[in-house]
Amino acid sequence: MISTGVMAAVLVLLLFLLCFGVPVPFAFFGTSMVLVFLGGYDTSFLLPYGYTKVSSYVLLAIPLFIMAGGIIERSNMGEKLVNFIELFVGKVKGSLGVVAVVSCAVFGAITGSAAATQSVIGSIMWPRMEAAGYSKGKSAALIASSCLLGGMIPPSGLMIIYAWTAQVSVLQCFLATLVPGIIMAIMFSVAFVVMLRNDDGVQVLATGNRQEYFQLAKKRTTSAIPALLFPVIVLGGIYGGFMTATEAAAVSVVYATLVGFFIYRELKLKTLGSVLVETATTTGVIMIMLFMVMMLSRLLIMEDVPGMFLELVTSISTNKYVILIMVNIFMIIIGMLMDDVSSVLLCTPLLMPIMESIGISPIHFASIVCVNISLGCVTPPCAPLLYLASRLSNTPVSAMMKPTLLLIAFVWLPALLLVTFIPALSLTLPGMITG
Image (cartoon, one colour):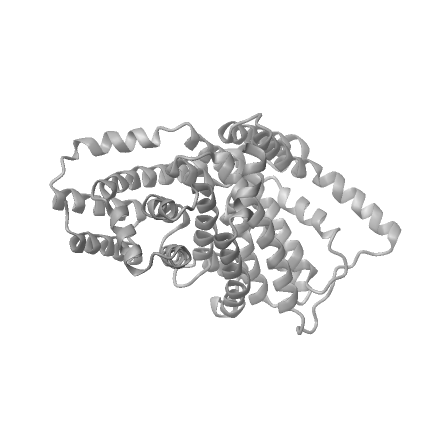
């Protein structure tokens, strides 16, 4: 066994490698080799263990949802959804912000990808919001945060990875994050309307007279029906018990392909080929990362690092709520330094024993992890989705910083407290549907 001090130094080394830009798989692999050397382990068990862990039927859902998201992104579904959602907002100051939030939530639920949601919905909404007099910094900050709702409103690739790591039901994890995701969508909408209350020159949506409105509504609704049926078919199949998450992912690929080719007619064979290449590339990166993390996770468990964490936390306080606050702070820091998939893979095995020791169920913990890791994606210094929004919208990060911090203070952190300290938000729906 390696001493506690040496193990702490090894974990610091891991964070150091990640902070200085070493690719995540190499950082995990390098840390694993250091542990093997210091602990004198025989490496013959590591490769078979990693292979066994990633040879999982559940993980097939990841490349399938990635493929479906790529097809949807290129099938003009985003434009149809945005035009449809605009019908229900009306002449409210800040209404385009509400449209952006709801569109991100719906499109994110379809694609399961925050980056894809930001690139599609952002490219549609930023020009509209700028033409209507909205602040570019506020608009970019709102969409950067709202696109993360796709990680909470299922199907979520992040929750598939969490369920696989924690060895719990994927369906229950999907259900656990659904209500928090809807609550956060409402909070983002309200917060943005409040942020715009003193802004001059912001235009409202023009809907015309009643006859023109109904003609427009009929046209947009008809056009959006195929896109709106997507979450109904996929999520209805999962929640109704007709399909597993992996089977639903396969259905989503078939449905998205048919809609893209034969209904919207925006999808071409050449485009489909590029989607397949991107899917293979992204899946390869994720699977290599999973393989490396599983080897490191095995070594950490053999060294009883989760036990060390538990002992450290309980030495500070044995109060359940204090421990929850400390765990949340730890995950926020990890989320600031690492990408979302790596953060889930690292935090889940380390923190699960602590959660179980204070009576937090793995399903409740799924929501806590999801909100924390999503928060890290827009929290400096790393904030990958903040910088992506800056690049896509051609907006300086400095202009986005104040509205982002306001959204963190008045939406993200209150939502995290609600999810953490009101378990019913995460557990009621799984209990009702799965018992």
